[in-house]
Image (cartoon, rainbow, N blue to C red; front, side, top):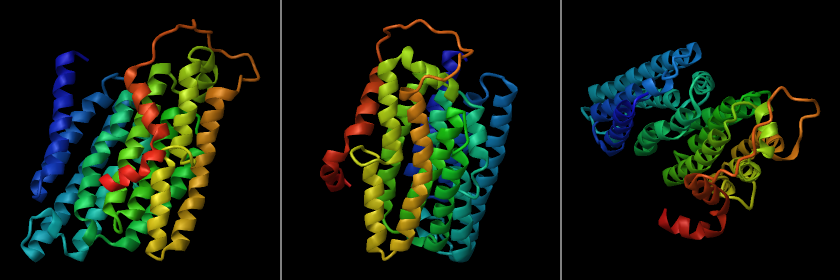
Length: 346
């Protein structure tokens, strides 16, 4: 893809996101979401491989349906209340339709089936955009309408997402699919808290973005698409493999690392809301995703495959690590000690 086209698509993505997150009117927010969808499609299908074309088609159909539902819910609300303001979403039917539409856009269960397939058909860099930047506008819409959403529906979707994200990721061998299911289970944690503490859901999203970006860029740098390649990568890039191990454990939410912070705060908030059983269930479900993160971590650093591999040994190059990977990895490992500062900013 030539640089001019890339620049146009990147600018459109930035513009679509900015329009959505800064708008007060439903039509403007919908326009931003549409610009975003149209800008990412060429980036998904740029390899012209049948898998990529299929991924782009699936993405387009799902996002078009979700956008139509967003428009429908806002029109229903305007019909009953005369309000087009995003924060004035008060009609119960509109709230339900909007929650379903945003769940579809984000890939929350039970509307998650498209997400692993689309991520599998996309390059790693586009996969990173789909997992982080493309989820920001829908999350901001949830943030702005959080006071009128149905907490029971969100909690059900959240627990379903955490369960399915964990279970379905267990037997995957493709790194992009594993990261897709990881994203689904993280979205469950965001959805469960957004009705009670929207700022906490945003903090969770920011930290998730940091950790996922570090994981995707590391895998992209190592050219790893499946677990069998990851097993032989330690001989080629030992430092990156060690960093990937820590990033994955942080994504899993293990205590001394950054990923533990949002989980800890969410469990604390749920307990304050007298939802201790819910907090217990979602914490236990996160053990499922911990299993596949540990599997990835195990493959990336500890094992040599027990059989002779079909992969040719690549030359060990002392290629310098990309600065962005270094910064993102550091942030995704070491932010827990400064959590009091983060909380005062929030």
